[in-house]
Amino acid sequence: MKIMLITGASRGIGAATALLAAAQGYSLALHYHTNEAAAERIASQARALGARAECFQADIASEEQVIKMFTEIDSTIGPVSVLVNNAGILERQMRLEEMDAQRMHRIFAVNAIGQMVCAREAFKRMALKFGGSGGSIVNVSSIAARTGSPFEYIDYAASKGAIDTFTVGLAKEAAAEGVRVNGIRPALIHTDIHASGGDPGRIERLSGRIPMGRGGMAEEVAEAILFLASDKSSYSTGTFIDVSGGIL
Image (cartoon, rainbow, N blue to C red; front, side):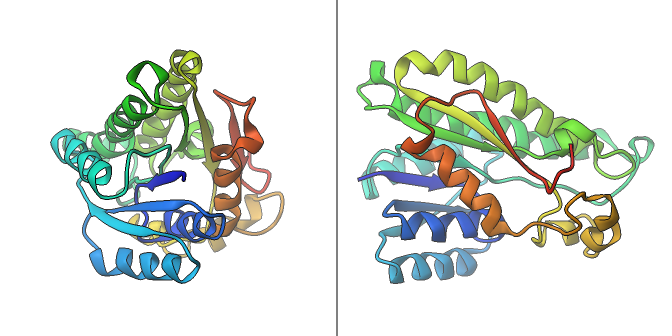
């Protein structure tokens, strides 16, 4: 039985990944930060597809809470064999000269350090040297790591750039321990994260810049995540799939 932990599973890409994974036979640990009701709705839908699904709360920016979450998953379902490192935040669009350090710390605490701590805890459970049987980590980055998101979210873009570098480094460290580490870089996906940045119509506003001429769907990102999580990508580590409609 493969146990998949999806962080940020209550909405958007995380929710779509949970339902696809449920249909493919994974047991699910669904993380949420504040919206328990939304996470439970996804869990209920996953159970209807025949999967075991349990919800776990944590602030990914807190190392203590991340450790507690993994311990609870161990005792409730079992040690994770797949981590989808999806939880992430952004804040209102602005240029660098308007940003304060507190905002930057908030962004990096979740998007970079939080993902790294989650990966560390997952690795401890997957690695052969710790008695694990191997596993897969998929880090959800962003095409912003390559474009820089100027005039909008360069702090968010920088945090995702850090995750790209981390993905490559950890992939090399983890390979001999049976753990594969890969990344996904979505762009302009129809989720409510754009409203969090104060621009709910962002995809429509920028659609002319997308070679494919449309925004992506969370389910399209989920397909790429499940491919990297599965044995179908068994010879891939330290690699990325851009789910970006052609944005490079």
